[in-house]
Length: 294
Image 1: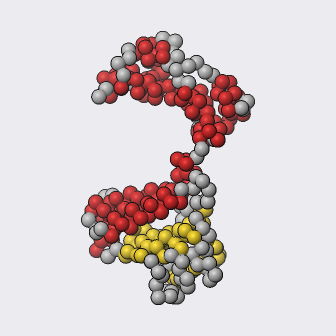
Image 2: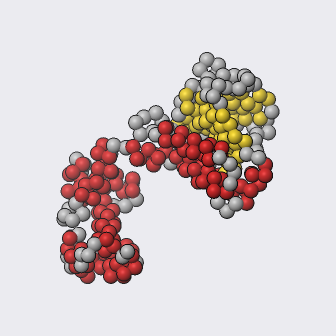
């Protein structure tokens, strides 16, 4: 392994887990799925360089917070910029380093586990987590700090298991970047979310596909096709599921009679409501109330 690093980086931090702890991580029922072996942060890492001709025994995640750097993997040289991530696969040759003029600041994690294979779409590839209102880079950094600080507090099973769950979420925030951003999306500006909000606000009214499409300014056919593509449900199928969800809430948390709930949600009669309810939940409204009433 070749390396070229200055005498450390100001404010750098790193934790390398002992081998006996790693052996435990491989056998614990929670941590064996995904676990951290090394973790750290290098700010403005001038002269940072690593070359491993035989790779490392772990997958290596590099998350560029700022500045620039480069990675050589699979015969190709790639450049990493702000809010971009690269995960190097275990046991494969690679090299990486900081840009000479604008050295990167990076969060890095070495990890292993049985579930690492669940992330093929982001391993060995550059992922751009984006730089926009909804990107949530700060939230991802907080998640990193949670892992680091818990490991700093020691290697008791609870700490290690919590870090394992955090790592899974951290990787999911990269693989499912669209879903990770969802919490910050402006709902009114998104056609699908806007239509769902309209449905939820009209569960106790009688509306149809044309009403929903008109609300968002689309033709019924165009909106129906778009909604099906984004959610895998037809708009009215989704709307009816929301009605059943509301019915479940009434059955569990209100004293409304079943026929009152049926009429409130626009069903023709209690029998029609009961049939629709059982189709979705496999229980009749009466059975559901008996089972889940607190």
